[in-house]
Image 1 (tube, rainbow, N blue to C red):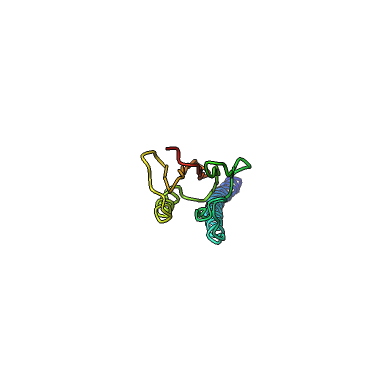
Image 2 (cartoon, rainbow, N blue to C red):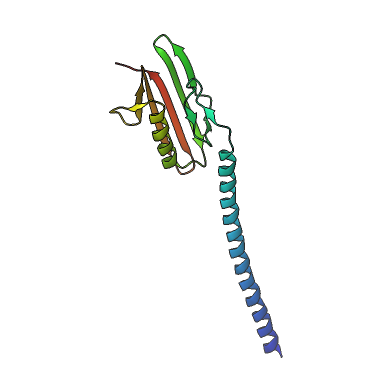
Length: 149
C-alpha cells in the first residue's frame, strides 16, 4: 500500500512538473507575442504621425517615427547662409529603409551627391545626412551648411 501511495505521489509530481514546463513555454510565447505586438503598435503609431519637416529646411521631410534627440539641435542664420545641425532618433525605424527613402527624396528635392560619403549639394549649400543604427535605435543626423568652395 505504501509503495502504491508513493507511486501515485511521484506520478502526480511528474504531471505537475510537465504542466509547469508547458506553462513556462506558454508564458514565453506570450511574452514574445507581446513584444512583437508592441513593436507593431509603435510602428503603426509612427505611420500615423503627421508629416513633419526639418526646422529651417521647409522641403526636407523627417522620416516617420523619428523624434528630435536631446536639446543639442541648432538652427542658425549666418551671413554666409544657414546652418542647421539636428539629430533625430527612432526605436522602430529600419536604417536601410531610411537610407532608401532619403536617397529618393533628396534627388527629387534637387540635392546632388558629392564625392564625400553621405554628402549632397544644392545651390550654395552642403547637406550631410547620416543614418546610424545601433542595437536599440536608429539615429538620423542632418547637417546643412553653406557650400565651402
